[in-house]
Image: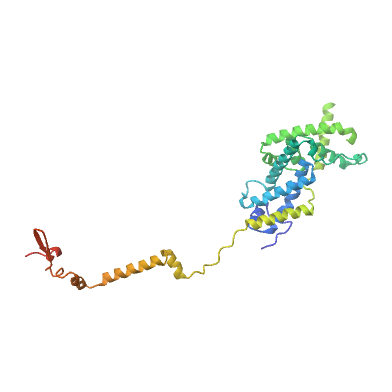
Length: 190
Length: 126
């Protein structure tokens, strides 16, 4: 079989067919294309590196299993994966809330050190940390739109809501984010 | 003035969000290995079974099976033989068994009436 180049233009749909036909390189290409995105979203939703890895692995496993039944042209692989990850993360967040605060892992500390606060990168870290404080649905929409750079129609598909509802969530999310950041303005030098 | 400040804050937020965007994060080798191992395992499970090799069963056995087995073939053969025997047998063989049937002299009297073999064969009495 023809070797698949890492920079190939083969579409995700075609790779899914190749995977279902037993082509091992299709798995490599799909894994390298999507695992980083999946992991990024899981980390931003859960703020726990180990849990995020578990979710990323679980989401990719579900992708492998659905390959023989994949319907080309119906959904993008990335949209499908984001949807799976958001559902898995939502389940885990609900369980956390049900288990009490003592068993909840400490969120990763995104607060910049006193010295580092003068550095621009820490303002970016502050924005990411502020997004993490938003309510679940706002956080998911804001993360997908601004951190994962997913277009609004795709976010609507991931969250199973209308594009108007996505725009509304993003507008409220930005207002809430601005309020959080304004409170930190002095300490962050913004 | 406050409106201006608010717009400035949102502009600054947009700029920061644009810088903060990072759709991908580096994936450590251990996680990638686990993901690829899962893929291999799933592919192995989903692999379609290879088509069975061309049948080694002899043609005669396959024909026999189609007809219902050797018992059915034996019965069929016997029936064909009997049919051929009956079909090719000369009429005098019948006369030997039933004398008078063919020449019309067969006496077949029942009760009050009587008729001859010729009646049976449709010949005129005259």
